[in-house]
Image (cartoon, rainbow, N blue to C red; front, side, top):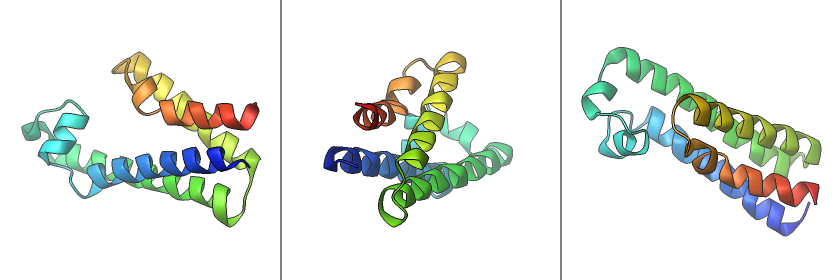
Length: 118
């Protein structure tokens, strides 16, 4: 695994830890509302808060798995699978929510995948 792949992959993990932070610890904050283009009042709804916290755990675990695939048990195969998963989820989000999700959530993953495939 190249140093560029390691750096980009680590940045992908950090991005998912940031999403985890927003969704689980700062669920009703101004920054969370801004990032997800939602009103703070909507984020305060108990059902939305619960959904965000659950989704945040998934995002945090994706970050952990990426770091494991890079540093603990280095595996290009697992890293590719995780990156493809992230890209597919970002693609789905871009089709159903906001077109920019593909670049915002999937951009670093796409660049990292490119460094692994070429």
